[in-house]
Length: 150
Image 1 (cartoon, rainbow, N blue to C red):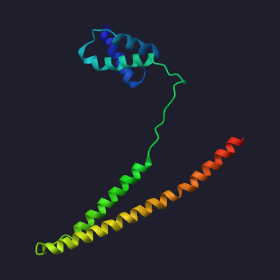
Image 2: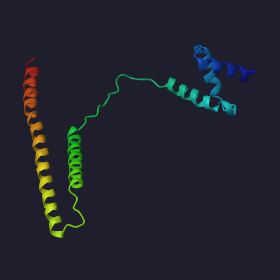
Image 3: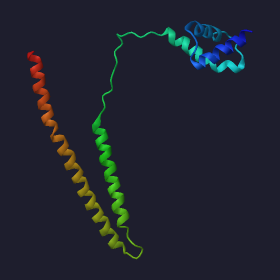
Image 4: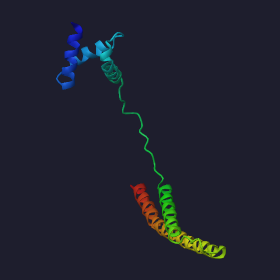
């Protein structure tokens, strides 16, 4: 008879129609050692709920925020661009089977020069982006002086 009552409570629980007292009764039932096999999944749920009820939150616990290092992200983006440009260039200028060894060396030298130009371009863009940080540092220094005066 008790098993039928528990199954009815479970169906009402799944529909969201149980009261707090009925949910407490379900938690007590599933805290027992002997539970029918077809209800074991519910046992895990209600045991977890019982454990969570016992935990408390204190406001004094500090929350540590992660500081992200964006320099690594920009470096990896630049590396991906360089690799993509290199693959595109080498796929466009693959030597044919009739070329001699000397002409392939020349093409390799051209590829090296093209890669150097690409790296210089990426370096210039990266340096241009970091030059704007000087203004931000000056702004922060001035802001900190104003805050210290107050």
